[in-house]
Each structure stands twice: as structure tokens, then as C-alpha cells.
Image (tube, rainbow, N blue to C red; front, side, top):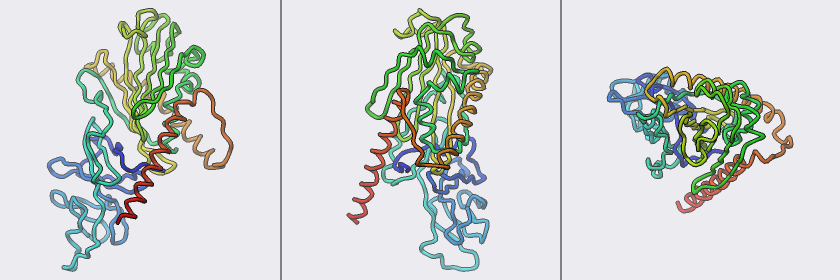
Length: 349
């Protein structure tokens, strides 16, 4: 189940160059490349002749992609402009082209109706290129359904168990004040842990020697964008009232793009507003968080294997699942609306 009429992150900006890159997005093969002036292009990665991925081919001139199998050539719009050995080009010799936008050090793609591709609807990840923030993005390949990653990020009680050596401790479970609410576009989960020990990674990053007041504010925007405002200050210094001084404040930024129903392109980044121009600080924070994220990938992979063994096996919900349940309900509603609009459009033709 994929929502098509949304922007998704397709690649890191540095991944796309003059060498074609193939990637499956929402179950569809897409080839990416740049023209000589740096403009990113996205086409269907499937030659209409014998279905070889066009990403196996090469660029000819500025913006013509040549198929590796029989040399058919396609321009930036997806139209075939040459068939070697014949003058006539079949009218159906073309591939899809997709709207793409380069923003926040990521390449975004619109897989649905191109007429609906409004760039203003791209979710805000300005921390990635804001000079007042240090940030490093990364890519992980998760062998699981994309909604399992949503569930994970919206329920941070798992940090106490999966990440007890890095960003978690039992205070997250036993001493958290939690609020789950619907926003105009999605879900927000707010968690405060007051006057409790800092987890190991926070001690390394922030140098805390005593208890802290810690916050985790999770904003979910469909289909699969989750931005976390996280941090801690020495306890009693006023963080709950908005005075975030003497501690650390960070943004954990996540964009999950379905590859298939059981695999996910997981784009994420960690940003910080303290010592923002020091690459060593950025790297130190990034490595601490990446260690935790790799632990998450192990969890996703194991979950997916069990789900595929028995998709009908019963599951239970607990209080900590509230945010994830709300997110799934939003996705279900939006998918039904999108399907109904598709049926209506087809009937009107």
C-alpha cells in the first residue's frame, strides 16, 4: 500500500551524477542522472523494447540516455529519439518521466500525478542546510515494510531496551510524561523525562555529570516523515518552560521511502545547534546516533521475517503504541481517499 501523490526522498544529492543510478521507488524502477548543467532527471528504469534497466546504459551528450542492450536512446522527457538501424521510431517508444526537486541535500521525487506535484508540499528539513546547525545526513537500507520504521520512531520506549548502551535508559519508560495529539497534518508525541540520569550517548555528547530534564518531541507527517526535537539540560534549569540552556538540543530527521512492501530506503540525519560549525562535533554526534540506528535496522529486519512467516499471527497493542496507531490510521484514510479519486478520474474519462 503506497500513497503516490506525495513527495518522497529518492537519493542523497551526491549520489546522482552523470553515471545513471537505478533505484526502485514505491515498487517502480527509476533511473536518475544529471544533465551537463547539473539538472537532475528521473525516468522509468525500463526500456520499452526488452525491459532492460536503462540504468545499465550510458549518457550520450547532454541529456540522452542510451540503452545498454540495443542502443535505443531516450531524452530527458522519456521520449525515444533514436532506434539504431531504422528511421521510424514507434509512437509507444517512451518511458515515464517523474518530477524531481533538489532540496535539503536530498533529491525528492513525485511518483503520482505530475499535475499535482506542488513543490510547496515538500516537508521542511531546513536543518540540513541551515548554517546555524551542524548536520550530517545518511542512508540506510532497511529490509522491512516502511510502516515498521514509522512505528519505531513514534514509540521511543524501545530506547530503554534496544539502545541501552547509547541513547536509552529505563527512565524513558518508567518516568516519562507522554502526550499524543493530532496535528493539522499528522501526529505529535511529546515526552518529558524530568530529573533522571542522562543516557550514555548524552553523557558523551553533552558532558552531563548529574541528572537532566530530557525532551523528545516527535512530529509525524504522512506518508513517512518523522522529525524529532530532542535534547536535555541539567535538571531544574527550566527546559520544560522553554529555557534550553547549558545542555544539548538536536534534531533527528527521518524520511522513509518504500522500495517494495518489504524493503525501505531509510534517509536520516542528525542536526545540532551547539558548536554547529565544528565538523568534529557533528561527526561525534552522528556516530553515536548511527550506532543506535543500526541496532534499529536489526530489529526491523527480524520483525519483517516473522511477519512474512505468518502475516496473520495475532499481535497486541500497548499504551506506547498510541502514536504509531494514529499514524497508521491516517495512512489508511489517505490511501482510501487516493484510491477513490483514482476511480473517479477513470470513470470521468
